[in-house]
Image (cartoon, rainbow, N blue to C red; front, side):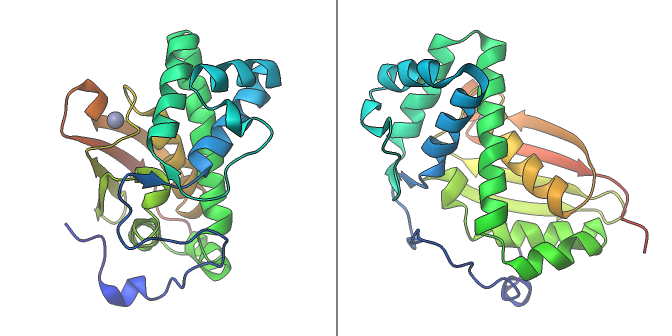
Length: 221
Ligand SMILES: [Zn+2]
């Protein structure tokens, strides 16, 4: 399903940034999938643990020399797998959620134009969420890699945002990373996020990862 019509999408000029957006990214993903995960590991467990996990993932070449260009998505896949193999389940999810929160913040600061960051929070959530889905669809390679992203919003007073990544390459059970990316973006720009549900997951055998965010009431005028 399309994310938005072209008229709304045109409100969002591309933010300036060093990364180039390929028209169709084949198995490539933005470097923040590695950068923010390394920072989350260091923040939560210290640089020593971060180093060990990067080494376990075969990514020691990024220690002290973080990537700056698009990555082969197999690299963050390996990093996420090393985190899951090294840490207890709950701790792994905690790291992935923190990495997702940081990646959402990066997208917010660098991929959402400043004017959109100013006016979206002033709009009713039913409208701002539709505009934000349109905006993030244009940068889906940042969080979806080769996965096929679609987003839609239903309802107006209590909108429900449904975000689908078919064949999600970065899926881990329940996808705490993606949930945190989306929560950070929508909570920052569309008001309260009342719930985040991951109703289908590629890591659990489904064909697509589906995240649903329930948004609160529209802000008072
Ligand atoms: Zn998933």
